[in-house]
Length: 196
Image (cartoon, rainbow, N blue to C red; front, side, top):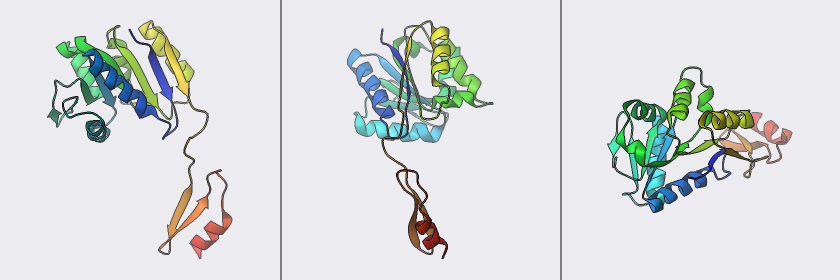
């Protein structure tokens, strides 16, 4: 049984690589990996991305609208679909080795957070949990809750800063003006040029 992990890392820090590794391991072990996302648009995007990374036979998607390759070793679906499968006792859950929760900070959503909680609680003990987010403020407390709930260790991996710095630009007068540099410093000249 693998170790569960919570990767709390900035955008572009490599969270997707962790998910891809789980997909590759599931394929190698002839088990399954379920990749959940909070919205259908993200599910569709991950489906396209993963089909470029892996072969078409490896990746499938189940949403309310689309069902492609449901026998695949990697299934991409919304968290609501996974909850429905758990409630129904779907047979495929027996073969699941990994569940990846992308954008797990949605657990804080006042309307939909309960879905994420229920899924985490209902997952069978043999499933390795992979939590991914860039914006969970209470990373350690959340990992502790999941660990107590599932009676397993959840290892936390986080990044102290963005690997790819943000720069801010303003489009004005048919030109692009940098107004905040990679160090987060406001560039008054860029601002002046933009508003003239």
